[in-house]
Length: 508
Image 1 (cartoon, rainbow, N blue to C red):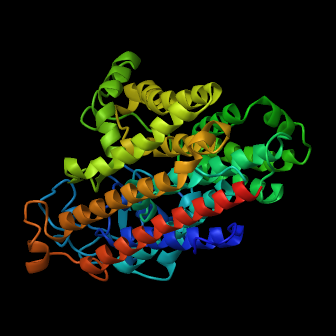
Image 2 (tube, one colour; image 1 turned 45 degrees about the horizontal axis):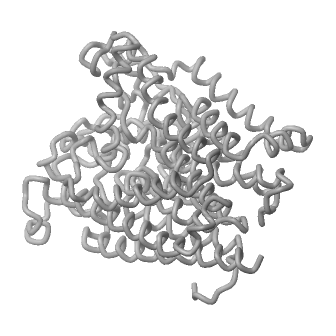
C-alpha cells in the first residue's frame, strides 16, 4: 500500500476489505460469552434446529412460545443467561451449551422467522458441538458480513469520483455494526446488506447516466451485487421489504430522473429486477403466512402495550436520545454500557462527515441528505407507533443502523461529486482523522465489553489481570492487541483507498 501506488485494482480492493473486516468481526465474535449478544439464544436455537430439518417450531404444553428440538450437544438451560441484565456478574456464572443439565428443546420467539439467514449461518453447527459450534456460527456470520462489506467497498471505489467514499466507509466499522456482524443475529447481515446495496446501486445508476463517468466495474457485476444484497436485505427481517424500498428510494432520489429512467427502460434490467421482486415477494409471503409478525403482547412484555398511535409516536420521539446511544454502542442485554467519554470519538467522527455534507454539497444534494436524515428519524417513530397497540415499544437503536449507514454512505458519494471539489485537498487528512476516531471508539468499546464479561462492571480494571473470572477464546489481552493492530490496518486501508481515488481523479 505504498503512497506511489497506482489506482487500486477492484479484486485487490475486495480481498483486502474482506480480510480486514472478517478479522475485526472475528475478534468481536470471540469477545463475549455464548448467548451474550442480545437475542442470540433465540436466533441460535432457530439456526441449529433449522439446518437439521425443523423449519418452524412446535408447541409444548405450558410454554408460551413455539419450541424447537435440539441435539444433545446443544442442550439448552436458562442458566446459560445467568449474566444477562446483571452487569456486575461476569461471564463464567452459567452452565455450558450442551450440558447434561440442559433440555433437548428450547423456546424461541423467532422460530417462524424467514429461514434465509439461518441457513447461511447455521451450517457450522453440523460440524461442531457445544460452545465451539456457537462460536463457529458467529464466525460464519462474520464472513457473510465481510463479503457484503467488501462488495460495498469495491462498488464505492469503482469510479473516478470517490475521494470521500473511504471516509464514509469508515462508519461501517463502528463497533455496534462489527459486534452484530460477529454474532448469531440477523441484525448484522441486515446492516451490511445496506452497506453493499447503496454504493452498488449508486454506481449502477451512474452507469445509465451519460453525463456521469462510467464505473470501473461491469454493469452485470454491479447488478449481481445489487440483487444479492437487495434480496438479503428484504429477507433477513420481517420488515425487510419496507427497508429495501426506503434504501432504493433514497438512491434514486440522489441520482435523479435521467439515470433512473434509463435503468428502467433498459430491457436487461428486468431479469435482475424480477429476481429482486421474487425475493421480496417470498419475504412478504413468508411473513404473512408464517406468522412472523408480532403477536399480541401482554402488559408486562414492553412499555405502553395497547397504546394508540399518537401516544406511541410521542414515546418514540422522547426516547430518541436513548436510541441514538444504543445505536452507537450499548452492548449485551443492555448490561454492557460504555462510559460517557468513550462516545466522544464517535460523535466527533460523525460531526465531521455531517458538517462536510451539509456545507459543501449542492442545494439539491443537501435536500436529498435532509430527506435521508428525516427518514432515519421518522421511520422508526411511524413504524413503532403503528404497531404499539399490539407489541408495545420494542424498538432498539440497532434496528435503524441499516438506514443510518445508508445515509452516511450517500453523504460520502455526494461529497465525491462536484459539490465537494473545493474540499478535495483535505479529503485524505479527513479520511485518516475520521478513520482513526472510529478505530479508537471501536477499541474502547471492545475493552469495556471485555471488562464487563471478564470480571463484571463492579470490579476495578486491574482485576482483569489479577483475578479474571471469564476468559474468551485466545484470552482477552490477545484480542485487545489483535484488534488494535487490525484497527490501525483499517485506517491505513482507508488512506490507501483515498490515495488510489485521488490518483485516478488526477490522471483522468
